Picture (cartoon, rainbow, N blue to C red):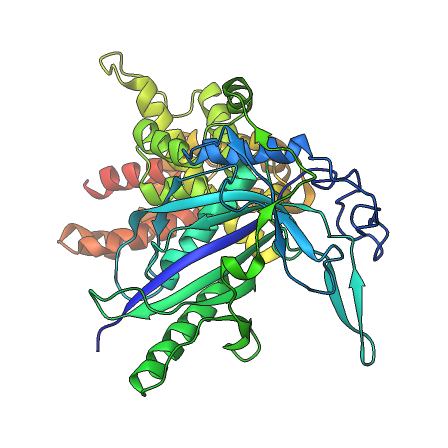
Length: 504
């Protein structure tokens, strides 16, 4: 039986302010429990909330980046529920008048299995509203006792709610990754999922084609893209099996256990009326002028999707290469820094005056060379060392210096890899490493001809076979000549000389 999967996400993004959304207490991660819980966080009698302007500006920034409507007037509300880590008995949030309205995010979807090709999709964003985070219940510190840490209480959050536009785990993961990239790119969130700065709730339902939406279950607090994919796949199959076996799916909040790979119900899912929202009487409506919006807009960098399009258009890179290079702002900065260095050294410039597109060709040649190294050796080494691109020990100038020596024939690709490994582990500039390790290629035509003459003289029988039509022997001569040069002969020159000499 065919089933349609329907997925929507609610993403809690911790905003990168130094202080909480309604007080001056610190938001720094890792402090001793309850050392950053001030009077407002503790909900002591008589305290009043004061809105953090920086949190509002970060919300505006997100709205502008997703082409969303920024409400000229929005309202804070009290969301009432009881939980031990919520001292007030309510959470200050936004309900019917959020600061950010409808927007959209375009994503590149990489299918998780099969031979399906990557594709582009636009996911609609319903809203993004400001709210305060709750505290944290701490289990297991003492047997049979649960503690409460209120350091996190009052931390500013932007909850980003999507439309149910996704129909697979692959699409949900692609959307979450794109959102994660965006909030880090525009500087409103550090995106640290291990510390809870970026947490996802996933609403999942299934239905038969053409039927109304099915009953949804919400998977709470996913802080790993891998776990998100596993949780969705398990939940989808569970719902299908339940319905096909004659059961009924009930609306619920559920948790995913990564150790078992299963979801389990935590509580019945509340609807908005269960929270008894009403405007917070201690907070005036938030008013955002056009002038304020434009001031925030002026701080936005070039956005990932626009940068991808520019890389494809200007540098003739593939969409997949462009997507890799814009996976983070640090990656894009490294790429552009290295390309700039190569162009400053004349790498890729055509010498023919009849070629009007010399500048464009140079940019494309340099960009492809850099893209290959960043997505290849750099990414592989980062993975091996468990590092983020922001922790890359090689600068754009260092990498550019090494790639310049590949392009001008000073070193071979294998020599470049040795330079790269040394540079990564010990630092230093390419030229000094090449000199110290004797990696410079032999490009002198006379020296290469002498090497080739020696190989031909030592293998007269193979030369006769080659000239009689056994073209596959050419590889043998290349290998022998490279061995004779100790791997230092310029491959392009060596091939050219070999062809001429073997042709007689």
